[in-house]
Image (cartoon, rainbow, N blue to C red):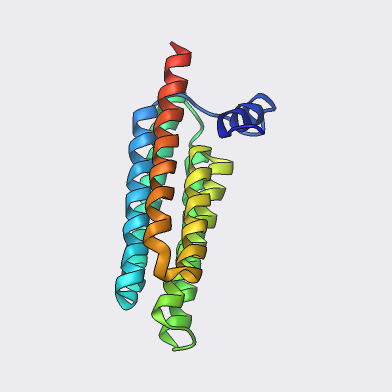
Length: 187
């Protein structure tokens, strides 16, 4: 069975994805910030469901800004077209529209705050995963983790902390290992 590095390397060799090695520290820092905010949001959903809705409404624009900034930062180094950044801006604007539509449903009383927060988390997981497919492959892992967190928080609320802490630690270690291993291999 292939490990994550082998799969990513195969995808890169086949030109399915393109990993731009510059700014590994920036990528790692942004990834860890996204993981920390996501973990905090799931904890809030478990302990204060009504506040979780407001938390995720606040976090979505922060995630968008961080991801767009990272793309801009990397694009500057590689002299990429500004179209890449505009595509990502449109990508994140679509999420903001979807979040607004969910908020209309929540405010109409059709679903409660916790369900709305979970919907936003699922939308965020999808958008971050797709950002990984189209813009920066490192986001694919974060999108998968967010999707798993959404499912786990819905199904295993009682046991979420026990499941989530090791999952977040494993993903964080994989990200650190991936970027330090790639950096050493390039030297």
